[in-house]
Image (cartoon, rainbow, N blue to C red; front, side):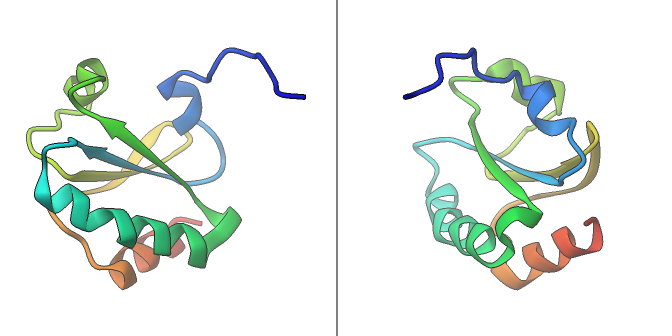
Length: 104
C-alpha cells in the first residue's frame, strides 16, 4: 500500500540529522547530465550515510533563488538545515564522497 502523505517540503528534507546532498540542475545542461552517474555512485557507496536529491532549477526557481544558485550544476551539502559545502560545476565522485564523510 502506498502512502498518500504530502511530500516533504525542501526545508524539511534538508533539516534532518543526516547530510543531504542537493544537486541543483537543469534538463538542458550538459554538465548536469555528466553529474548523474557520479551522484548515483555516491549514493551507492555511501548508502544510508547521505540522502541525495535533485532539484530542477527551472521547475523550482524559488529554491534556486533562496540558495543563490546562479549556475548549474550546483551541489550543496546540507545538515540540520545549514549549508556546509557548495560547489558549482562537475565534481568527481571521490571528492563528493570525501566531503560527505567529513560531515557525517
